Amino acid sequence: MNITIHIENQSRAERLIEFLKELPYLEIKEEDKERSKNTTEIKNLFGLWKNRDVSIKDIRGIGWQRKQNERRAFWLL
Image 1 (tube, rainbow, N blue to C red):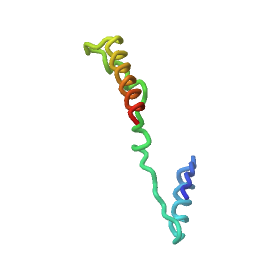
Image 2: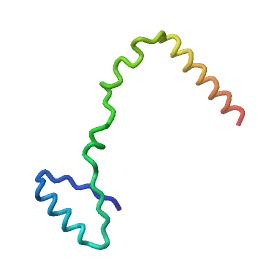
Image 3: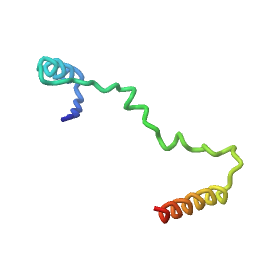
Image 4: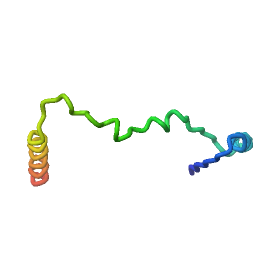
């Protein structure tokens, strides 16, 4: 079982962690703060296709071909 606890007060959080580490049947894993901040934000994706020579028609054509291939593969099963 996994439990996540959020504690605002840093000193109380440290005391609780020290207490929990004393219990032999618990495994304590502290989450790295940097890891939780590295989530991809949608803003980072803006302009991804900015200087590429691709039109919406090209993208739709590729998507349509993929759908057609999926339908054919379904009927072959």
